[in-house]
Image (cartoon, rainbow, N blue to C red; front, side):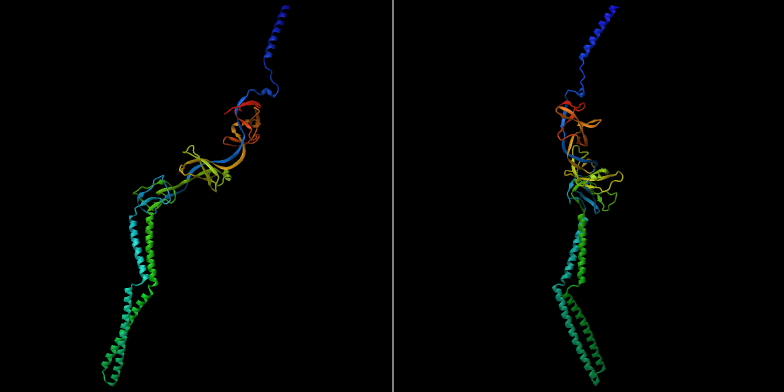
Length: 437
């Protein structure tokens, strides 16, 4: 029994020594908050908080349209003699696009010019009066008529005197009644000749008066009306000749050509008739954006816009708001906004799809940090600030996000070094080593 007790005591002693040896080999836990802090430096990338201007933009999409289009047709009907432009060609105002066969109009112009010349000559004749030889003829006619009248009057006086003498002799019985009747008949003939001579003289004198006074006013008016009518006919033919050549009404680019030489074109337009040409002004273009109604109050004419167009990768275009439609689209409650974009090289074509952003506001001196610096904790957003070689946890209040940065409204100051890479797994007050990204 004694042996058994001694053996048990020895075994207990050996077991106690083994336990004490193991207890001395485990490090003791540190007391307080330092127990959760790692003393191994973490490799991090640091970026300073900086103040910069923050631009507020309204995103939108739309289509490219021309500043203005012209669907060009013909005022005249006829056969096409020549087409002078091609699709895609840039033209200036007044550039000939097409010529019609104008041979008939050229003949009509020659005839109209002859009519004008004749009417002008007639007017000049009326205004100038008779020629000198005609004047002399009228003067001679008056003199002859006057002489004939005097001769007739003298013959009448002689015949009347003879009648008086015959009557006296008949009373005395010296002549017969037949002789008296013959004298009276001769007097009546002389009287008739005086009347005729007087009429001839009056007619010659009237012609002389007309020659002296000039043409009547109604003759002049008639001649002038005939000249005006001839000139109007000539002007109409010449206008048709001008219209037989179709020209560009403004500077632009031919985006459609629907006619070939030899075709017969009609002046009668209709809803199903294609224009001969479509001319577009594309030195500048519009991009018609569709903007949700909630952004209407932010939009103003003259605001800057940037846009990109499908089909032209890597290129950005600048423009300004030119027009804002006054009423919303009832179907989708959105507003149309026209942005005018310079297009000197013609890269932008009507119909292209565009995405862009309209700058509606700029806030200056806004404190911002990279978005990747922000971590989410139960208490809210936090960042780690590098101070004295350690990462210090800092709660922040954030504002707007834009282009990979976020506004900080409280919690940081300008220039604070913020951890932007390597912050995952950091603990408050942990040592850090800055590195190059």
